[in-house]
Image 1 (cartoon, rainbow, N blue to C red):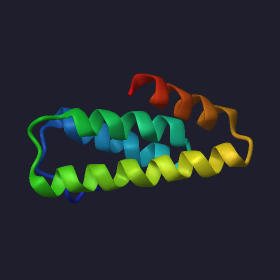
Image 2 (cartoon, rainbow, N blue to C red):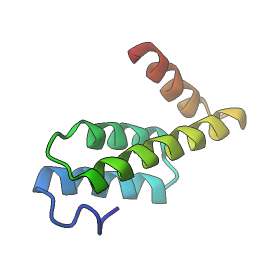
Image 3 (cartoon, helix red, strand yellow):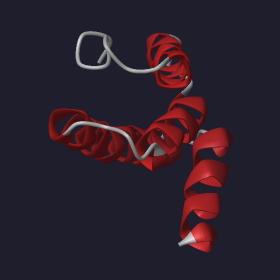
Length: 85
């Protein structure tokens, strides 16, 4: 992620930093919020958009797995996702 967004503007780089930190800490609800924010930036290259979309799908799967194991934070994040769509 950091390599793909290396040339991005500072706000995008900050979001990528939050995303990678959340993933390293297995804080999947925070990672989901960060990747959603990353997906909303308009000035991305095609490669960056594809990477953000893939990360969104992966993190959604991680949230679902965490929910299945009883993680209430993951369940709440998935519920908010459904409501916002």
